[in-house]
Length: 434
Image (cartoon, rainbow, N blue to C red; front, side, top):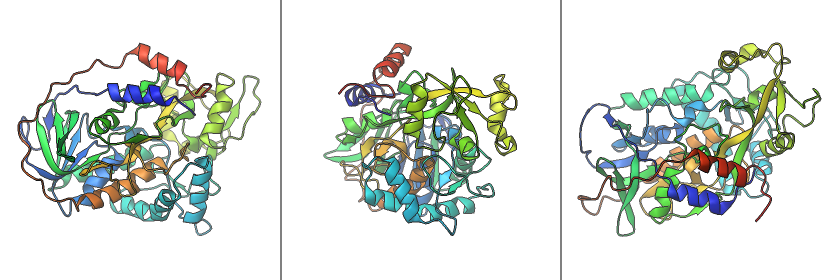
């Protein structure tokens, strides 16, 4: 559960992803972009939902260093937690969130998250997301409150629905394959970004760039999750916090990045040791289960007790890798999964730099404390993404047009396998030194 603060901060600050092959939807080959009301950096659930929330009031530009339909959010297998059952409540959801956070969560942030959760589920339904019938139970939750779409394909279903709306929206412009190099400032205010191709001026800039878990050798994240947004914010004068809190997902397929969703255990999957004996509470919070498995090196996840038809995508991925979940347990081990800390913001996404906002995994709102409760991550993207977008609409106009800013001058070495091995060895799941 713990990772050394200095190592994570140093790595995040030294890694800026800047490889670019530019595609601009709507204006291929364009070398400049008009000033916009809101610039969203990142195309995961937080960024796309924020763009939609702001688009009724201003023109929005979404800058994505990759394909807008292939964000880290699309890999999320867990669902979205919300108190939707009559016997549940936002207060009970908040209690579970605070307990998982080990006493370090910000109560006001937790209250905002859990109180607004049901409304955000309704928003997604209106945007075309079809949720599965019934609510799931996952580790750390005292009630069934996790909404899933397509079994373990919730992230993909939500991200795809948002992306389709964004790409079709007349006031939202999407630039793909172009990475941010730096945030641009005029005085103490953020006025946009520099990429390797251009300077983009914006009245408000929202970072939704995700986490940094690809800095570890064993990870559930794609290679681009390197903390580049956090590093850019730090260089621009924003504060970072809680980067020592890195969540390791307990059940990742051994020798793979394939995460085996907590929802499996919520439906009855068992964790077994090498002798075939249960050794932990399968529905304990992630940090507890991850430590129990790490102490044994690995564990076996037995899917035979569950209705495997509920998780067709995940079962198919296992079968593609040569596993037969119907006949034998699956070998699993922890892997770096989620960056709890990030750019310090208030409950409306504001950072310490005027004009700069952050939401989603790159932000540190205090909602997760020291450990995130399962299925609160996509929820945070929705709740805080919306709040940040609405707050950003209040930013004043640009002091003057930003021109002549340098672009393409910073090109750092890529993250190496050696660095990832060092992070796994020295900043791993259990902290054993200060």
